[in-house]
Length: 218
Image 1 (cartoon, one colour):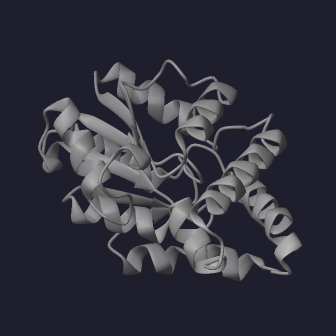
Image 2 (cartoon, helix red, strand yellow; image 1 turned 135 degrees about the horizontal axis):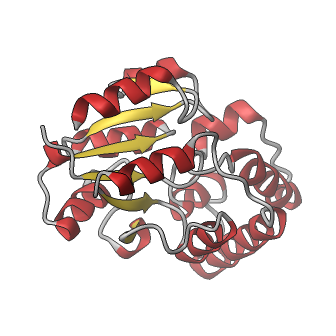
Image 3 (tube, one colour; image 1 turned 120 degrees about the vertical axis):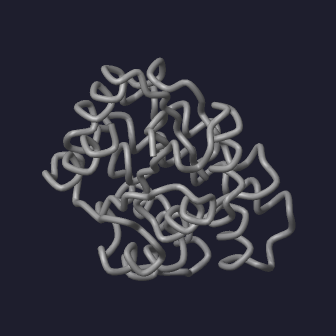
């Protein structure tokens, strides 16, 4: 394998946004008398597309009301996420990739407005060659389409890329696309990421075994 690209998930991978999303979901669902805890959030919400989540949680809402709910929830998230910080060690990986002339892209289920907001808040809006949004494709994670599309944009084969993912749905997506996938256990139990195909799982981007892997791929 000759490494040519690094593909990053966004929420939970570039920054630990799950606590913010969890609060926004809690507040948004409260008027519907739906109380969620962190376990429910991790199992039923984290890493999934908003339309699918709302269809499961609020199936009685008509389509326009569902979209209004989603828009309000994401607006609340952006209000709460004005001071995002990158996951520990992220800049070192990005700089390493630049030094080795690797292509870099973000592949996310996040709505486009949120994704662009987060990248700007993290001061990473000019770093990545592509921002791949599931909402603009035929299917989102856990389907492999977002990662397959990323490879096509760069003109690469699956064995020329690695992916960083924090959720089971994201790991499934990248693994199904044939990409070596590194689990970031910022939001999930490492065992859950290994169970769906992550090659290694690390808590953040500083772990020595991650760097051993990266150096071994060049």
